[in-house]
Length: 151
Image (cartoon, rainbow, N blue to C red; front, side, top):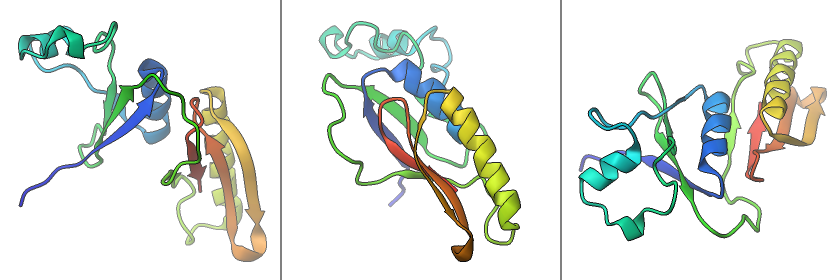
């Protein structure tokens, strides 16, 4: 059986989430299919009923893609309810280079990524600085409170 995967993330502000996660993952906003100015125009052209397209849906990119074509498409689906509990899954953004890289170098890389993500709207929950375990990482939240780690 052939299969592909898309990650769908419920959110209240797809535009903000597209901008944040494109930066965090090194992705780009997904352009609408050829011949269509917006995703909404595409959805209307293929017959999606108007009542299934809330105001503003598809007027701006609501998904991001890996420009190298390796990672999954990520779609930010607008929902009316806010996030109310801890994630049951999360991203680990592996920016440090792995255990073959000296801890001080990994820590510097993690700190640089954390600073960039905070500037983009993330919040630091906890810094995990455990040199005896060879660990330097940050537990963070995206602009809508979804947890992720930078290691």
